[in-house]
Length: 88
Image (cartoon, rainbow, N blue to C red; front, side, top):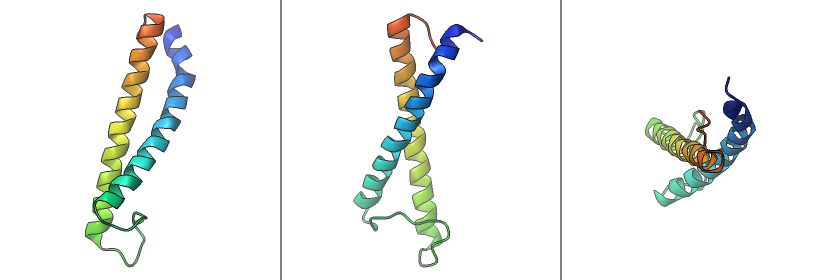
């Protein structure tokens, strides 16, 4: 394993945690904007419809994936600018 990969591990973990927080906040705001309750439904919420639960799950998954990819890519680009090597 390359030294740059090993050195990037803690950075990647920190960025992963940060991206989770950002994605969670973005999802909550998006859910409010589309006109639903303040809280997104859980799969076991008895009073929610299948449509609403699946919509929430799909939206949440898409937001988390986009935020994670953006944060991971930005971290890799920044690492290359600082060290001259790609961490992956």
